[in-house]
Image (cartoon, rainbow, N blue to C red; front, side, top):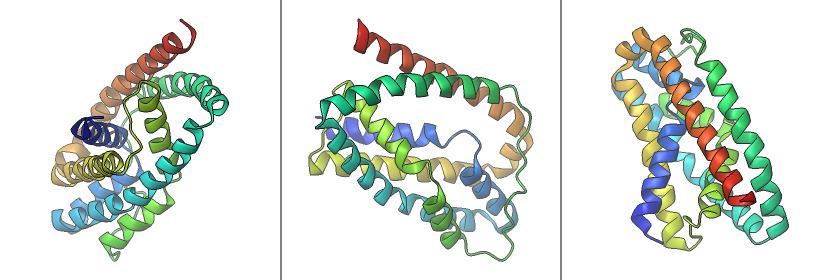
Length: 206
């Protein structure tokens, strides 16, 4: 397996997975607006740091699942339903308006610790990376050896950091255009998840 390809997949999936407005990136935006770009970068580093144990746990879980064909086949079939549901969810989200960014008060917080805390509390982290790895493995695009996993983790960490860095860097612009940004990105994600569901159906049943 090409380690640079796994680095790319790690970067791409973590970047795209974090690009749509959510608590993590909206907090990066808010910290940038209230405390500056340096504080936003510290926050992004804190979030990204916690990606490492999340991906490691996801790899361990996925390797066990991959070694049990009946479980893997069941998950692949369940994944079809999940991707269809995600496609529908993102399509509905694309119809909504501007997201509020005042959910987190940032005046007196430590950006680094905030990033670590919110990333730890992000219950979708491990399932997201596990689902990503399973999807790649289904298409024989993932390898569980140490070097491959290392580069996948590195890509995932940098992808997460970079999208949060961009949210902090362009906070004012994003704040003004969040409505259109949300609509466009969610529509794209709806199409992507729908296509993944179709490809998975084709692989399993045709």
